[in-house]
Amino acid sequence: QWRLAESGGDSVQPGGSLRLSCAAPGSTMDYYAVGWFRQVPGKGREGVACISAGGESTTYADSVKGRFTASRDNAKKTVYLQMIDLKSEDTGVYYCAADRYKPCRTLDYRPYSSWGQGTQVTVSS
Image (cartoon, rainbow, N blue to C red; front, side):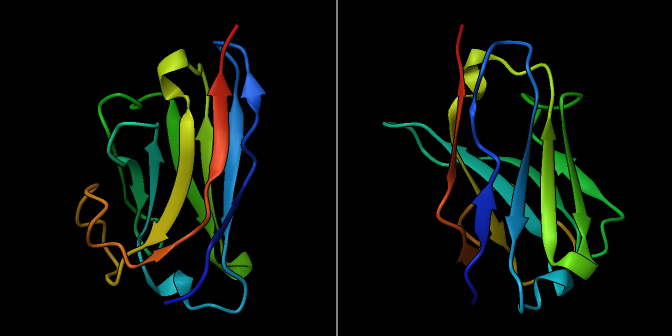
């Protein structure tokens, strides 16, 4: 396991955009699929996106399809989540996490073993 570090969270108005980053310098994160998750108080951790180790495939929750795009730069050991057309229901703490496999297996958070500390995204007018 290693420590991931998310950044890029902010407060934006509905319809706005943000790009989150997930960095793990010195890790072997580039060998594994990475997922993005979000959580709001009182609710469980929701998987929103996953990108395979090589970046050739992605998986998205229905609630974010067409608005969120996961990408990665393995040379920089960094994974990104581009979010456009943000809605109030996108508000939450966003986490990235690495799986132990190359392909995306699931958006269920439980198999993911290495987590970041989270970054807050607030969408409000």
